[in-house]
Image (cartoon, rainbow, N blue to C red):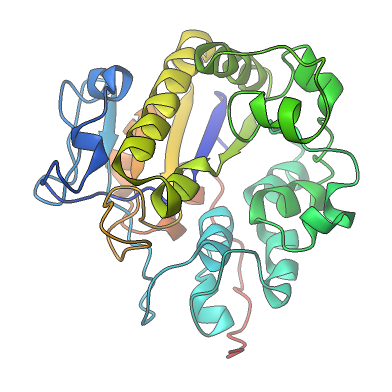
Length: 312
């Protein structure tokens, strides 16, 4: 593990898209933070790995040598463990984590390995108490499952109210409107980002997961996808204000979707943006797949890898 704080921001369904602005919302959205990190350049399939003074993009294969279109369930497990979950399971699967892969996630996630190494670790997302036992949690994403297995699914509405957690949607709107916590304060994307930067500064390794980008790619068209990306960009501005400049920040996704509004998940490379000391490590390791993310964070996969199950 590196001697400086490491932060992984997981964005669901964000790939590197075409150079056509009529298809790719990255090319229409106002993204000053990402542009500043990359010295004015944004990744496209024609130029997938732009480099700035502070950051570099590495396109990350999400197909994992498996036919079909990458999905969130197997993609998230691959990203968080460094193991090829699609191969272990026998195919791409999603949107939730398949039951057969939950032991892989429990034992092999970056959070579990950080805890076993005795490192201070945090899962920064707020979740309602009892989430995984509720109807909403019966088909869970990989990040809360990994956090629960590592004993880190511990930030609830109280933490969210005092800025010691971040909503999965970045803003607190969903908690206020749909979960009944009307007393929670409104929070801007920038302030939510500053909260995440402060949380991560106090831990050797932190994970934050955001899913609305994938939802935007499925449902919201160009206008909604632009708005989703702009929210993330403002959030990153806040993170960079409070996260230590010598820290390692990785922004990575599990598969493509929002980068091409013409129709659902893609086989495009997943987005991988490596900032600060993580960019220096990435330039040495040259990650090419979503399974390479844990190694850049100083948490390589444990051996041996789980056997391929061939489950269909």
